[in-house]
Length: 258
Ligand code: CO8
Image (tube, rainbow, N blue to C red; front, top):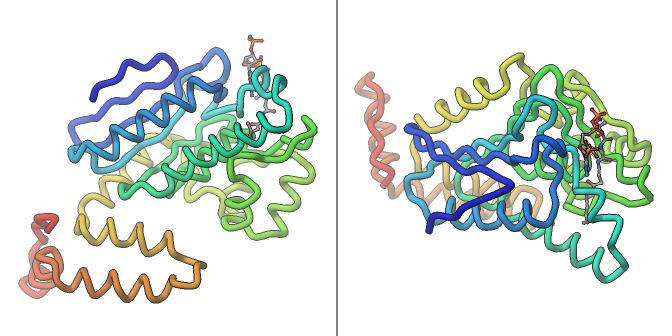
């Protein structure tokens, strides 16, 4: 179903990439309830639309990816409301991480608080030289509540996560790269992200899907078992036959996605 959005944009380009843009540039794309609801709706569409092969997640304007949860809404929360709001954001960001299509975030400018947490829910982050990433919640008397205390340690290790979350101090692109928080830093992050998606989409579609599923199981008690099961499933696919045959025939594979 096609939705009309006010705070996000969702457009699918000719290369089957869905461009999901957080679109409140005057508020540095801060995530209010409406933005979260619209992201949730956009995920429904992205999941159902078989024409969408990958997602490019970005912020509108030239200053920010997303400068955090909307502080004017946060200020109104009481205990039960805060817990509910945290769970709501966690659920939506979890849906992003669990998408069976690669999600690449373009981190251009500020990615703070909930914005950093949104970027961390993507599978890959490409940053611009101007990226400033941080979890400043403690400076507001809060902690990250959209998964940041869980995803940041997984990406950068506990020591760096303790430093970033306890000091609340943001880091710049070069430090984000060296600590593993972003995958790449470049002067044209959107172009680099698109190019990475094109590279991904040249590979066997079923293999890309199963790779997403296998990596998601990393660290869980069934991680290795999941890898072996998915590996076996891939050995039954036409893509596997085509990929290996093409290699031996010294030609490019023509994957059917079956
Ligand atoms: N929320 C609401 N409005 C914001 C936010 C925000 N997070 N960030 C920026 N804005 C607004 C500003 O109020 C301003 O609006 P107006 O023009 O109407 O006054 C507009 O965006 C432009 O911002 P600035 O004028 O401040 O721009 P500067 O270039 O001077 O500064 C900064 C840029 C440094 C990014 C600055 O805007 C800033 O510090 N923003 C707040 C950053 C922040 O603290 N983010 C974390 C918020 S807490 C959070 O994300 C918690 C997530 C988990 C919640 C879980 C439970 C709900």
